[in-house]
Structures are given as C-alpha cells and as structure tokens.
Length: 82
Image (cartoon, rainbow, N blue to C red):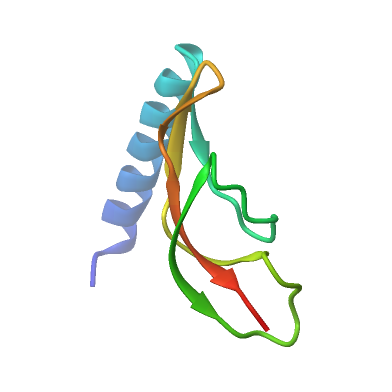
C-alpha cells in the first residue's frame, strides 16, 4: 500500500499528463453505462445483469483513446446480454 503523499503525487502527475494529451486532441474513451458501439468498443466478454439493458457496457477493462475523433485504441469492455 502506498503512502498518502505518494498517491497524491501520482494522481497530480496523471492529471497533468492527461491534460497535456487533451491539448493535442487525445481523449480517453471510458464508456461506463453507454450502449455498446463496435466502432469505439471491443467486446471482451458478455455477462448478465438484470439492472442494465442489453447491449450496454457493463465493465471497462481497458479504456480506449481517440485522437481528433478517430479511434486509436478501442475500449475493451464487457457487454450485457440478458
């Protein structure tokens, strides 16, 4: 377990890095509670969840990335199939 100070420094570093990426048009794809879109998401597994609708993203294993609205790496997700 990391000390609180180390966690804070890592969090600030990550925010700074993501801010720099955003300036150049690089944005994360993190599709929590969105409908599955094969152009932006890669289905890794399917699962059942009575609280969610079919073809909805259940869990995100790895966020994806877009560069100027073009998908560089799709988000790897679980898709709900009831």
